[in-house]
Image (tube, rainbow, N blue to C red; front, side, top):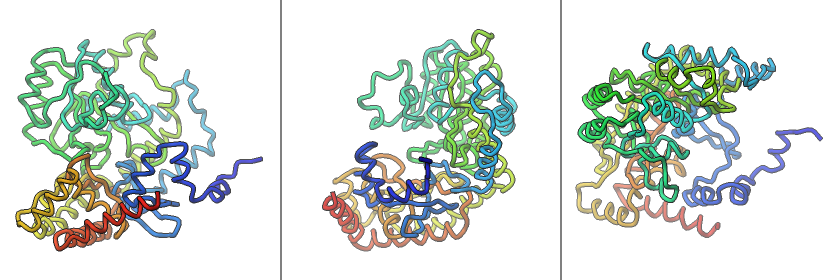
Length: 459
């Protein structure tokens, strides 16, 4: 009996949620059904997902930033087909294969001249784990600092640098010597660095959970303090890297020269998981200091040929299609189109971010009528209003977005970097409709309540 993928999918079509409830994560299935997000997607094309009824959904989540080039990008897809046809010798392990060297060369070439080495892994969390290990060994110091609200991954070491209590609870004790400082707070950073035992300050240039930014003055001073106290400055660019913010790397906006940079998500081209930790030769050569230490840090699948092909094709497409400049232009288009809505609606307070990493910030209105409704919602659950935006955007307008973090009224947009003016216009019109309803009457609340009730009856 041969394996027939098309036949397998056809015979088991529609069993998605049943299988997840029985064999994977039943709580995730419950959440999706409760929110009315229980769709059966069949295909992905560019900025859109298509379900089994042929309905198209504008994907402004893009796999948490994985689909920077959109879904099914032809360049990446062809490169992977070519690689399979070539029967490349994969994962020989005792080998120095060509493609990992080529991808490392390309990545290093996108960064400042102080970066000269690359370690490949399978995810952003693994890239952070590598950065923590390398920092400790290279400096001989035990402590690592991270910023409040940070999200660096959910493996044990990365979780130790996670600012979200909801992710950490029950998983302790975590790595010792991992301490938080205020994001944008120079006083707390210097207080910890002054102790002289900090190996690295690991920080997102724009925080993914909430789309929080710090000032240009903060970044210049933070980097200077790290140099002053001989602490490595590690830029987590897992989500912000490769054009997301309208620059190849988010740290370029502030003229920074980090000692290490982590990257993942977009580098996969949407096909093959990959992560990378890039650093100076001095750090790398301290860790791999002699032949006996040649494999002191390694991972089985890190340099697999298909991941390398996906990464090389992705970087080529980013360059050939001027994706970074396009992301900056589309970010400006979003800001321009959303500004009138901030003026129009009391509960829409701010648009922040850079490029196509966008946070829509909602908050308490000024008028008494709307203020009472706001307090009722927030009394029921902190951050509920933002969910009342995400739900109708999806169910009414077929636009997939996310609440930026637990308990905050911030909706996060991560559109594919190849989105155009049509997608900008579609989103702004949909948001205008949802916000008008939210400000005019309570039908938005009833609509969401109806979704919850239907889900409860279905269960």
